[in-house]
Length: 324
Image 1 (cartoon, rainbow, N blue to C red):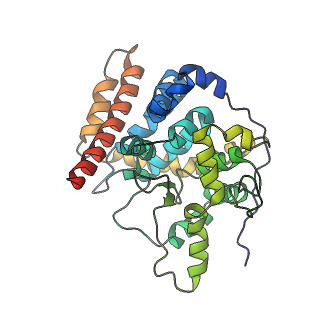
Image 2 (cartoon, rainbow, N blue to C red):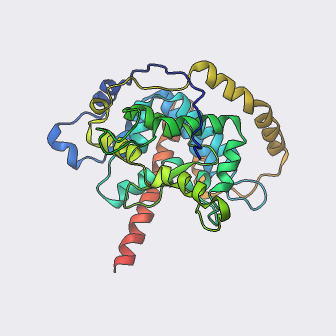
C-alpha cells in the first residue's frame, strides 16, 4: 500500500546567501579541520538580529518550566521552534543544525540545538504510530510531513544523490519544516549523525510495517543522510542542481491562522496559572533581560550560548567518566 501523501506546497525558488555567511565565519581552507563549525554557526547567528532574537526566544520558551509537574511547556516550545525555522534564513538555521562534528562536545552542542529535553525527549518512548497519527490529524504537521516524504524520498542506487528529487536543499528544508511538530526528529546521541524521532515500533500489532516504514524514513534514509553529509563537506549546493523549494508565503500564512485561535486560548490560560519554581537556566535568561536596553539582546544571546556550552561540557564530562 502506498502511503505517500502528495505535497500541498508549490515550488518556490529561494537563493541561499552562503557567501554572506562565509564572510562572517571566514577562515582559510587549512583551518577548516580545526574549526568548530557549530560554534561558528552560533556566532554567525548572534551577528544577525533576526536569528539572534528568535533563537533566544525559542530557547527561553523551551527551558521554562510548565504548569504542575511538567518539565516544560512543549506546545509553546514547538511553536517557538517553528517560528525560528520558518523565518530565519536557512544559511543560519542549517549551519546550526547540520554543522559537521569530529568530537563529542561539538556533536552534543549540535544535538542540543532544538533543546531536546523539552522539544524531543520524554520519560518513555511511545509507539511511532501515536505521534504519526497525531501529525496526520493536524493540518500543518500533515502538510509538512508530506513535503518531507516528497523531497527526502530515497531513490535507487543509480541516483547520484540518493534522492528521487535530486535536490539536497529541498530535502533539508523539508526536514527543518517538521521540527516543532509531533514527529520532531533529532540526533539520537552525541557521537554520530544518526537521526530519528523519539519513538519505537515495538508493539505495533498489525500496523508494524507501516510503523517501520515511517521510522526508516529517518533512520535508513540515504537521501537525508547524503544531504546532511554534503552540507557538512561543502558539496551541498553543487550536488543539488535543482532550485531549492520551500512552502509559499500564502501557505505559511494559512498554517499560522490555523493554529492562531488554539494558541491564543492556551496562552491566556497559562498566564492565569501560578508560576512554578524558576529553573537555573531560566534565571540566567531572566537576569540578562534586566540589563540595559542597549545590551539586553547581546546578553540574552550570550546566555543562550552559555546554556549550550553547559550542556556540551556536561556531556563531555560524562563520556570521560564512563571511560575511566
